[in-house]
Length: 322
Image (cartoon, rainbow, N blue to C red):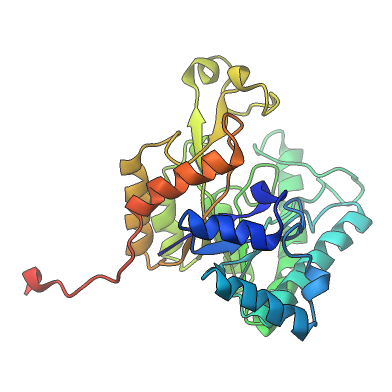
């Protein structure tokens, strides 16, 4: 099991500078952005797409630092009701899939996207309750749009031998494990989760149960290591559907935290153990979005904790069971 880093917090560094720093603190893999919200500071996809020389240079610098790419990241909304925005997100995804294939990277991380509530609407609509009944109707319309789009994209990904790892995220159609399973069942096995627990904690979802649920379906393609702390004194008053600005920390019901600052080391060891139980032995990609500390300090503390939690070897024979 490898420790990785989603690289946007190091956007002020060149790729080589970021790799040198990450190698120094014990990181095995990177998940660079190639479009959408993560940007493409370290891996501008069109500079590398179909360019064998640029790809060879990339491979050389990765080898120099003994770091590999766990996934290419492009998080956006390919289901947006604005045709231009949807087309841009779709282009990013398809080019990311092609680039991943050329770089021999197995995974592209992304969002499911979110449509409007009907064909005449022009704003994405996150439906969280089935009543009044027009909301249930809107939700079913959204699923029709999503299944049509993702069936085509999943076939494209399959042609390139690349998995699509969807982060279950609020304000997207797929934001919890049952929706993830529904989309996978409606498309193909290339569609699975970029399992990011940070958005599940505040929804009250048990992380190890969610891992087992998706693991039973072989639906975990990639994992983010990202923590969340729920602040009960705020949540008791206004719940967890909190629109307070992320940088207004004292007044939020929950905050994204560095690994270990929302849940302790024993919890993260349970997460790692459960992932291994369901057959995931890939990268834990640290995503730093803790506004109470700097990117580097947050990354370093996360690496330190995860280094004690991850398994570096394969299990031996259970001789005691014979």
